[in-house]
Amino acid sequence: MSNIPDLASLHAMGAAQQPTYPDATAVDSAVATLRNLPPLVFAGECDDLTAKLAAVTRGEAFLLQGGDCAETLAGVTADNVRNKLRVLLQMAVVLTYAASVPVVKVGRLAGQYAKPRSNDTETRMLPGGKSVTLPAYRGDAVNGYDFTPESRVPDPQRLVDVYNASAATLNLVRAFVTGGYADLRQVHTWNTDFVRESGAGKKYEQLAGEIDRALTFMTAIGADPVEFHRVDFHSSHEALVLEYEHAMTRIDSRSNQPYDVSGHFVWIGERTRQLDGAHVELLSHIRNPIGVKLGPTTTADQALALAAKLNPTNEPGRLTFITRFGAGKIRDGLPHLVEKVTAEGIQVAWVCDPMHGNTFEASSGYKTRSFDDVLEEVQGFFDVHRSLGTWPGGLHVELTGDDVTECVGGGEALRDEDLAHRYESVCDPRLNRVQSLEMAFLVAEMLRKA
Ligand code: PEP
Ligand code: CO
Image (cartoon, rainbow, N blue to C red):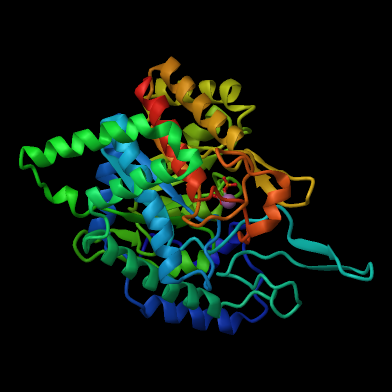
C-alpha cells in the first residue's frame, strides 16, 4: 500500500467527524484485527458496479440506492434485512419498467454504521429538570445509543462488531438475491398485493397492470432469462471512520490496485468533503466506485476540484455526485452546478438524495421529513436535468421495509401525532414500506413523462 497514506498521516490532515477514542492501544488492536479479516466484497464486484455506474453516467441506466440512515447491530435480523431488500427489489421493478433502462440496485447496508453529527454533544433534560450533556451518538460503529456516560464512550471493538454484522448481512443478502427470493414474478406479486390491499396503492393499479401484461407476454413467448430469477445487488455506506476504512483497504491481487473492501460503493458525506481533508485523500487512492454528497452551499469550483482529485482520469462510473439540496433550493441551486460540471466535460453520475435537505423537527419533538417535500425535491431534480439535457441518474433514499412512522404524509397521511406510534430510527427518519413503494410509483410516473 505504498502510496496510501498511513492512518496517522490521515489524522494529521485534521480529519473531520472522527471519534475521540480514550485508549489508543485498544484502537491499534481493533485495527490489527480488522486488517487480518477477509474482505467483505471482492474487487471484481466493485469493478462490475463501476461499469454499471458508467451506464448511469451515459444515461443508459438508473441507480436506486437505499436503506437505513444508520444500521444498528441489533437490527441485523433475518426479518429486518429481508424486509429492506424486498422493498428495494419491489421499487426497482417499478422503476425499471418506467425508465425502460436497467436499474442498478445498491443498498445502504452492510456497513452503514457510522454517523457524522452536527454537534459533538447531546443535552437532554432528565425527569426532575436536571440537564445532562453527553457525547453525541455517532452510530453503532462508534458508541452506544443509550443515553448513559458508559454507553457514549467510543469503543474501537465496535468496529470489529460492525465488520461481523456486515458480513452476516451481506451473506444473507447474497443468498436472497441469487437463491430465488428475487424472482421477478414473485417481486411483481408483492407489488400487485400492495396495489390491491393498501389504500395508498390503489392509485397505481394501471401501472401495475401494465407490468403484469409485460410479464405475461414474456412468459407466453417462452422467455425465461436468468435475470428473471436473480439480481445483482451491491452494498454501500458512508466512508467515515478512518480506522475501519483504512483497515479494510487492500491491494487486489489481480490488478495490484487498492480497493476498500468494506463495501462495493463508498461515499463521502456533506460534512467530510473538504478537498484537503482525510476522507477525500483516502478515497482518492481506492479503486471502488465512489460518491460525494453535495449540499446547497457547494460551489461549482468545489465540485470541479473534487472531480479532478477523485477522478483524475475522468473515468465514467468512478464518481457519483449525490445532490441533497432540499425541496426549496434544488430548482435554483442545482442548474448552475450541473451546467458548469457538464461544460467541463466531467463524467459523473447525478443522483438525487431527497432526504437530507428536508429534515425538520416536528412539534412533537421528533426529527421528521414530509413525504411531499421528498417528492418535490425529486421532481425538481428531474425538471432541472431535463431542462439542461442531462440525465437524472438515480435516487438515494433513507427507507426501511417495516411499517414505521418516521416521515409525515404519503398515502396513509401520517401526521405529527402518529410519529410516536412506531419511531425506531436511531438517526434520521426513513420512508416506511408503503411510503417507499408509493415513491417508486410516483417516480415511475415522472420517468414516463421524460
Ligand atoms: C446520510 O447520508 O445519512 C448523511 C449524513 O448525509 P449527508 O452527508 O448528505 O448529510
Ligand atoms: Co441520514
